[in-house]
Image 1 (cartoon, one colour):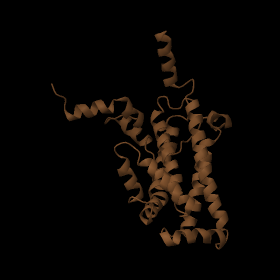
Image 2 (tube, rainbow, N blue to C red; image 1 turned 30 degrees about the vertical axis):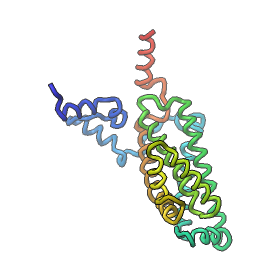
Image 3 (cartoon, rainbow, N blue to C red; image 1 turned 90 degrees about the horizontal axis):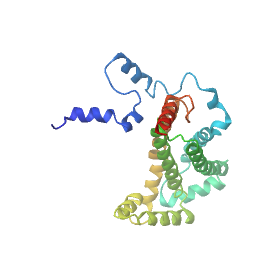
Image 4 (cartoon, one colour; image 1 turned 60 degrees about the vertical axis):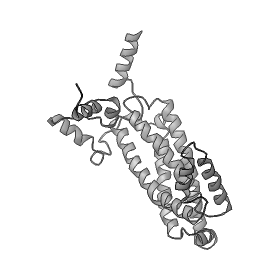
Length: 259
């Protein structure tokens, strides 16, 4: 007998992927309603209590906090840089030179933004290595691991799209090489290349497209994902598994039974 759409949806809600994303499950009981409220990101972004072990330096090396700090520096300095920058081909390079030689503290502002971007890329990789080493990708934290991987990609895209904005020779040829590498992707390479640049060459269309991605789309996506990332850390009971967690106890019991 063929299954109905409701039965397929019920099976989906009981799957491991669904339960890794929506921890409270589904239902119409009072318990499920209260769990739905407790899992709400806007109502429970920060928990009322935190395990003492999660505040120790040895637990995380504060890599996630440092990464978020560099992101805030990038947001603030990026907004200030936007006040002096025009994303147009004849003006972008002139604005960059003005920031370096004319605008008061412009060189400091630009270098702070640039070095914070380099630091964020380094810290994101270090954070991923630390989390992977501690096994934080294991259930029930696999969904938050996926969010972290997406944040890594967003960070790299932020760094890449910001590279073109000074519109100097280094930026022009670096983006030319990078877009040509993207065009080598099988089947979709030419489409990715055209969508990335807004044409076949690095020109005014590419500069405007990279500016919108760097200053609007990617930062908003990063803020959204960071909010989910922090929220799931609280709801999952911290970054790493603990010996007393039910999931860890069950895994050890299953391993013992298998032996």
